[in-house]
Amino acid sequence: PYEFEGKAAIVTGGASGIGRAAANRLASDGASVVVADIDRDGGESVVDGIESSGGEATFVETDVSSESSVKNLVDTTLETYGSLDMAFNNAGIEGDNEPTVDQTVDNWDRVVDVNMKGVWLCLKHEIRAMLEGEGGAIVNTSSISGQTGAGAAPYVATKHGILGLTRTAAVETAQDDIRVNAVCPGTIDTPLSQRFQEKTPEAFEQFVEMHPMGRLGEPEEIADAVAWLLSEEASFATGDMFQIDGGYMAL
Ligand code: NAD
Image (cartoon, rainbow, N blue to C red):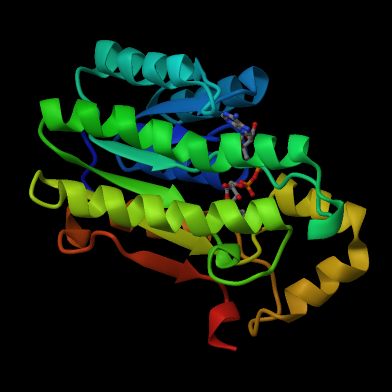
């Protein structure tokens, strides 16, 4: 466990999958966790779970694609816990899995708004709060799709874009005691990948086989890396991207 006692953390997309595992992990290491999601029921059940194991958490209904909603998230965190020390900008959607020639503008706009504008808006307001406070650490969720063409165009483009946002924010804040990194998960067993499996089972199986370990990752295996990146132990890591992908990028 890391020493997160007395620290406040935001986790977007915290109601499900990787975000839920990270919220649980940060809380079990002592952080006060703000679970941010559009899914109120899911988010409140994560908070209940944390509280029933003796941890501290709050749910704030948040749409990361809306600036007023993200500002409210950061303001509520500061009002509730007095500081913002850590953030995991992880909310994301897969969108329609169609080839480029069949993609619609509506789907493009929706995926870009949530996945990429959402991360930028979170960075903007979180960094402001950290600059006024005592610095902090941030992790964004990219993907193996952030470095390859594996996936539909809007999804792949946003996951590449998140690496750019990560690097810019890291350079801008490197002398302000703020670190900004990205995780690039391989295929992880979550509702997102389960939807992919239901829609196109054969493509999904092929995809899993492209991971040399021959299995899906567990959300907790990403949460472990996120916790390390947010901890003091990662004190020289900024602007970096961390593969946790069962060997996918090594092929
Ligand atoms: P998930 O669907 O289980 O969880 C995503 C969460 O984000 C949900 O709770 C959802 O309600 C929330 N969300 C969606 N739109 C939102 C919005 N506008 N504002 C706030 N919250 C919103 O998916 P997951 O697999 O846990 O994915 C988490 C992140 O990991 C995503 O960014 C995804 O692209 C990325 N990722 C997932 C995989 C995988 O295989 N599962 C692989 C690489 C990267």
